[in-house]
Length: 290
Image (tube, rainbow, N blue to C red; front, side):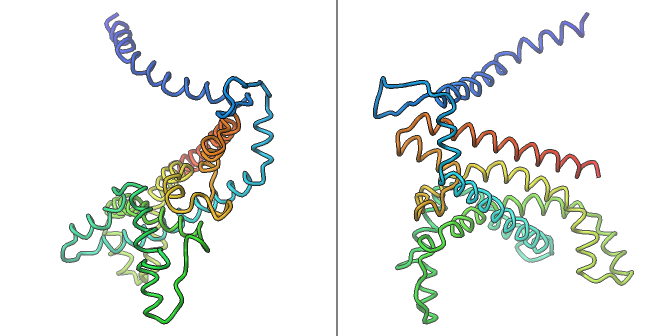
């Protein structure tokens, strides 16, 4: 009886939080689904009309959608490659004994705490500016013409900006995994004549595989919704060269005032994000069982 009363009391106490959480998620999602079936433009109030799946058909057949989808996949894939490879390298470097190791680790992790808008502005104005940017001055010093990164390589530039911000996160997780590695295994392999590359390939990398999987899972979920860096630097341009699905939904909803089309795009983005999340969760589950 006591156990039953305890469970009932626990459910009563936790129910307000659960109800609030469900309301916080279900109400906006339900409104988005409702608006996605309407022809609803903010410039024409009172002219709402039910059109069924018309918004979805328009959004999915829009040439900009496929370009935005490809850009989203390239953005996520490019950032993951840079952060995983760079994170493993930095983790190996920071695991070595050195003077001022604590300070170096803090400095390496610091970019993760910079707000996306601020980091995008810094990269846009201080590094990639074709007139006064650091890269432009370096090019002039070498006798080369300055390169306008955001105009001629917008998506690659955004990948670099986002990767710079997420690299410390990957480094921190991978460094933690590396420090849990039994050093006696490395010493035994070294005594058996294994080269540094073989020790990394057969001992270090398999030990870090679970941490790498966790980094991929967490980063992918957040990278699918990259927005601030695009808004601050390129506004999705030139054309749709740097537009991802998140920015396309924003442009449809708030720049073209098409709430119906933007809502349909938002639902499509949620579905795609859930498909990716389910795939990654299965991947991490298989990795943990191995």
